[in-house]
Image (tube, rainbow, N blue to C red):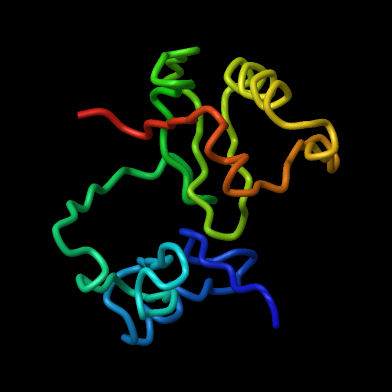
Length: 163
């Protein structure tokens, strides 16, 4: 058990990062990784997979790859260009923030969003979920979601780039 850093930097404090070390040794051609997360149980016979140095097109059939420039050399981070909250097909709140950083991090289940969207989202969650569902850990709020509860929640959309 342990934690493996897959950050975009080549080294930290004089120590080579895993991807940079693998590239230097010729094990991989690109400092790239991809993660395949299968859908609901039984939807695919294949388990999840971590691929170092690229991606497997088997998991991307009929899908378009979009590359986004990183805005940090410390994190896998891209510009956040728009966020919106939709409830019952109706736009509840929209924000345009060009300087907002979006972290693309497979090691956390947290979603960082602009505060105005967070406030509106939490108001709507509080209306739907009973207080015993909402938990507070440090400065974050989270909830244990059942399928029934998830169907009642508003949709939170994040756009990371625009065409």
